[in-house]
Image 1 (tube, one colour):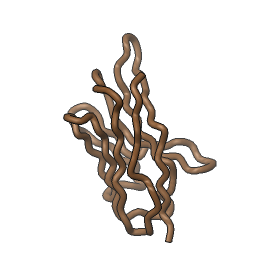
Image 2 (tube, rainbow, N blue to C red; image 1 turned 90 degrees about the vertical axis):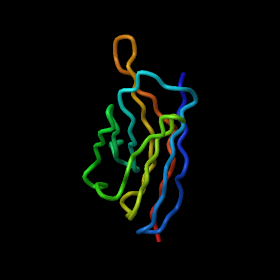
Image 3 (tube, one colour; image 1 turned 180 degrees about the vertical axis):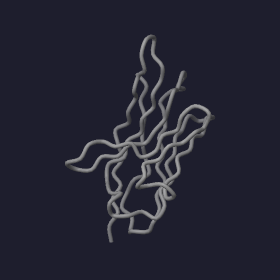
Length: 119
């Protein structure tokens, strides 16, 4: 079972920056997409940034122009650069990697990392 481990979360003031990382325990093959999600208390888990085959990216409207998703293929690490952070960005951030199984996609999730934006 592939394990994903997020890191880089923490407490930051409004307007600040953080860089999240997501490392896989082993080389992933047949990757169809890689993404960051976030979930705050009482809310559902929402997609923040999606990276699909060919390098195309999709961002939630609320983070466009502030967040950037990227991938280091050599190390199988996914990143999320978060700039101009706002209090409403406070949430647990999860890494997701989807791979193609024998007959259907398989979702792999990390344990999450807390991001708190507060003065």
